[in-house]
Length: 331
Image 1 (tube, helix red, strand yellow):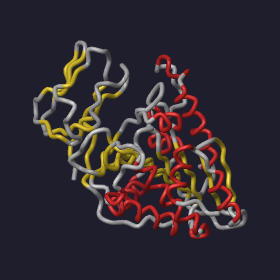
Image 2 (tube, rainbow, N blue to C red):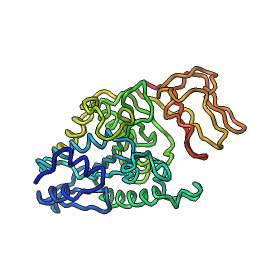
Image 3 (cartoon, rainbow, N blue to C red):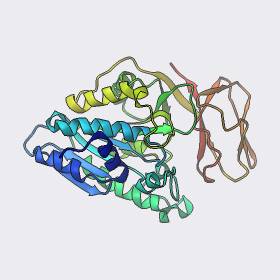
Image 4 (cartoon, rainbow, N blue to C red):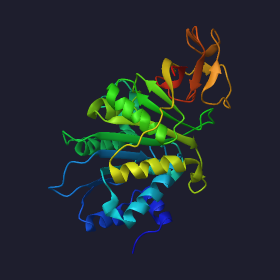
């Protein structure tokens, strides 16, 4: 018996892909579950090569709107599995944190998608490091096809309110052609702004772009909320763009969002780190030339010669990690 949409969401939240795997396998597709919370669905042998799309949710356990949205999308495709026109990998990131209703258990999973962690203190022994390794192994296998178009959309929600209700972070080093197609799709998906970031900071989408040549983005959809309490109508355009892409294999495009580029990374070097604004400051709040941004031991961060906008300010991160970005608008 087919799962309801609510049951599919619960299955995602717990990483149990048994029923979904059976549904697509019974439709003649090749299905693998390399670890709990990871599902790979590929065309049967002999079929033409298709785009490979990785969709990840729950990398932070308290970011539930993308998980609910993806649950509804997968429920639709489970009702007509042959509509799926791409090879698809689903990753539910931090299952333990989702169960606990927390952002993470030991460490931020979205700082651990790197092969080498010797410069990150005790992080190698955390539960999140082991989970990142599982996900990276599955990702390498999925993206091993040499000629496939590779995409990765890592779906998040922001901790704080934002002057743009939806925005994305895109690795700046992506080939221009791939980036232009991605930006057009993000515009179609109602993403209002894009930050071109030159540094990975160990994020999942930067890892797939740098290591596997994927057209990758981290999408921020609204704010953190408890599972079951999200207004998914706010992201209907994003869901529609995803469904069209998954069924057609073609990234529908529109005008690109507003484009920003990273000007400064705010690295917290010690527990003396403090920011010059309060916890209610919205993402993309403008600061004027010369304004103080943050202080740390023997360093002050200030705005340069042009207006800069603060994004992801989080003084509570571990020392040695990024506590925020300052960006400038390009278009």
